[in-house]
Length: 248
Ligand SMILES: NC(=O)c1ccc[n+]([C@@H]2O[C@H](COP(=O)([O-])OP(=O)(O)OC[C@H]3O[C@@H](n4cnc5c(N)ncnc54)[C@H](OP(=O)(O)O)[C@@H]3O)[C@@H](O)[C@H]2O)c1
Image (cartoon, rainbow, N blue to C red):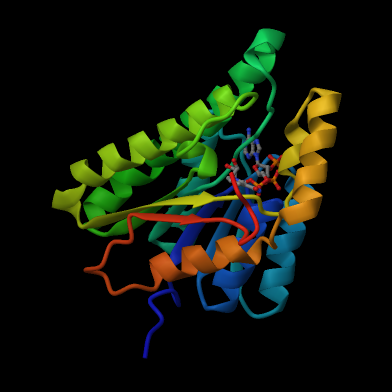
């Protein structure tokens, strides 16, 4: 019986570490073709080489999601190399937490560009093909911070709320095209994400919080596989998961 993953062409942004890398590994092991985008070319190329050596199909392409032309080139490469795109995972993201009063305007600009506009660019790159195919699946990565807010995370939480709002709007709009949409909202997962915090005191606290409770990144990969593997007429619209020990 098909797992509804085997043979699918899956484009993943932010595939050079953390959640994106874990999803690439699991989906490749389950027979998907993966097209990997991120800025750290060496990382995605060596991941693609490793997956190809293991008998999978993988392609790496340097992609900065703040530039629409680069995201389009990534999706076009999937089309040109493999003839279709079944799943677009808009995963690339940053989490430069700080209280608003510290006025980290450069951080605000970057996190809005990557976490919101990067997701929109991924949708813009994939949607025309999926409309034409009359099939597809767009998976956007939000967060527990897309559901909740607390001091010090306002801008990041705003971007992750935005991802959920955009995804729900997309869900309602793509009904005529047989496209599925999934929001995945993780809690603390052990990745390189806290490294994007530029304030040393906040970085230290966040690293400690993650060290205490974060769960492995394959938790996310399994959520992706769950959503993808449903029959085509079943659309898993949102998955929210946390470490069992996480209160927030
Ligand atoms: N880990 C968690 O606890 C957690 C919880 C909730 C939500 N999330 C979300 O999960 C997603 C993945 O994060 P992660 O936890 O896996 O962290 P991570 O290990 O730091 O990975 C982030 C990924 O995003 C990529 N990225 C950053 N800026 C980019 C840009 N401008 N263009 C292209 N790629 C870019 C990075 O690649 P390059 O640096 O090579 O470009 C990297 O592959 C993010 O959206 C994050 O907000 C994570």
